[in-house]
Image (cartoon, rainbow, N blue to C red; front, side, top):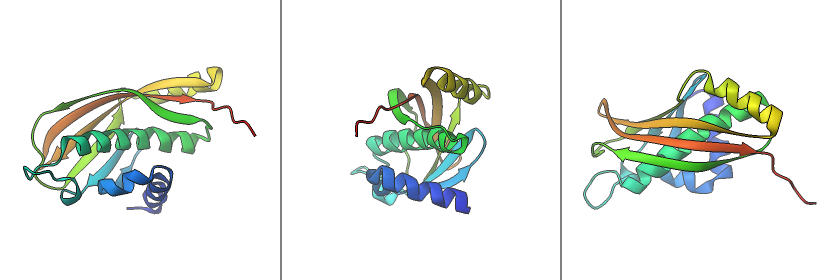
Length: 153
């Protein structure tokens, strides 16, 4: 893990403390993709597979992290929230795993950034896959919205 990934992981755990309990670590941040490593033990259920709720939370967290890291890198200010999500569970997860989040197309980020700069609000679609033992075990699709928050002092 580079210093960049380590710094973002610390920021994630500070902003959303519950994410520290998910047993994930930011492994790799790339231009249009972010990979998190997930630990099996803190996420296993009574069937000795990763709990579906953990898969959903880790997928949302990894996707949110991709967008949030790009927002910070671009110097944009605002509040990022998830608007909608769906997930398909394909195979059980029985080991440590990776969650790989990416934008649906290479042009999505530029369009998102331009819309936000023009309108003060923008949405972006993000996908994420849980990969375990070289197999895709779930597919997540989410819509995230960045908006300018009005603060009262």
